[in-house]
Image (cartoon, rainbow, N blue to C red; front, side, top):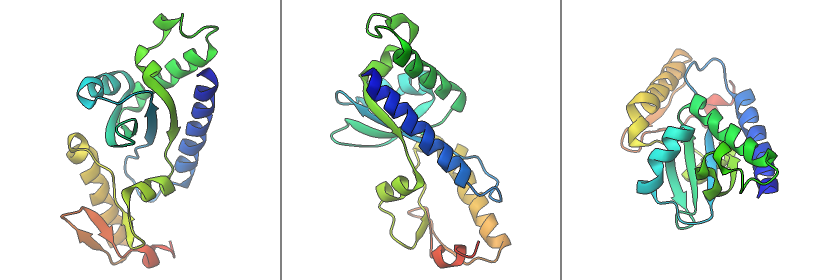
Length: 183
């Protein structure tokens, strides 16, 4: 399990750094990263959501594989650092199963984890070739994060006279791909 966590942490870090490097600094808005968690058993949202949010600063976005895999948004980078520290403590321990007091027991339910690249996010969202933004959202974070992101992107497009179509029902921006390629 330590080797799996070591590989997971390396992959997560690489993907998160790549997403940060590719961000457009002209779009001034808060960015959120995502992490995929694969569990040993079924993730019971009612039982674990508060624990993962309070301890690690992550909230579930979507699940698959009968709730044994899920995509989580990193809502609080400061609390997420505890997740990283706990994983590193687990990796570094001589016997992590005996040294359970030095990290949160919640990570022992995780089989593996990985970062989520922009390409993977687009694939999971089912976005087609005309959709440029289809932000994953949770009701809890909608007004706090996703609405301001959409509004700032619309401002950016309007400032540059880039035409777009906003589907308010689905909350996706359409028909931007050819326009944005020149930026």
